[in-house]
Image (cartoon, rainbow, N blue to C red; front, side, top):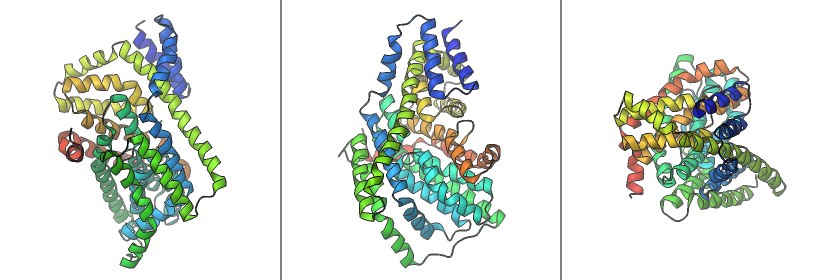
Length: 426
């Protein structure tokens, strides 16, 4: 049997019987390595090589930062600020939900953490005010994916580290599409609010806007510190994440919203949150190496180039491929496994590495609201107490609008690249 076919059969077979993804990746890779009689030390070597990166140290710091934000009462300050800004628009709570997610995206870099933090407060509030439960869950899950688009982004850190692409440029490239997707979601929310007569809050006075901004100002400085430090060349992404955690700790104690005795629990939870995805990344590293070793990139590249050789056509094929992959793999695992294939296609089409990186991250973010993986959708459905099929049907129009923004970025590269080209020229 062809070793590549064996690898895929064993992997999808394990997924079908509900073996956790990380173990399915490792077991299928080990079976293939044994079958082709490679040294078994290859398993250990490539697991270690996948996570042996200074840049990846930014991931636990960003996860810890998200935990501090969530446990430190920051979410409520951001909700109050967002309410003062957009609460008066018809469908006010839906718009607040999106704006809070956009701001939270600049703090934690984790979509799942944003779903839990924002959803636990706003989903019950929206349902109480007679918003449709399906729409409520859908807009919460979809807006939370901005956490891996608007910088800082854990996904972009991993992609940049593995593909040797400037993380600072990827961060800058994520700003415009993140804002565009947020605005598109607000437009959809307004449409639904008019259609179903969802309520709005009274317009905030200038004094109320100023007071809410004052309360949230110190928190809003965090994205400026992170992105400004990286773009300005003052520190690396890892150092930026560490400095952000230090700043957040000072902020929590200044607000008196976090007790010292709670820190061990938060640190423990952050270690667990970091260890699980990193184990998956390490096992994905074995499969990614095997895919390259078994010449899958060349096979896929030949298949696609027989269909189209235009850069735009290859980009659209990559998007279609990643939409399928994102339904059953987390973005981090998908990046590690299929990076050899993506880089081969990028080289054939002579694609800008930053442009391809941001399109890959945007497309894989969609997978966070598509079952069966769809971690953001699953968290939101649990909070909203509705079925996954109902939530998926409600999120489909938002997915379509998001894909529209992604395709727009394919046809107009400068839309996504003008910020990195302007602020971080080669």
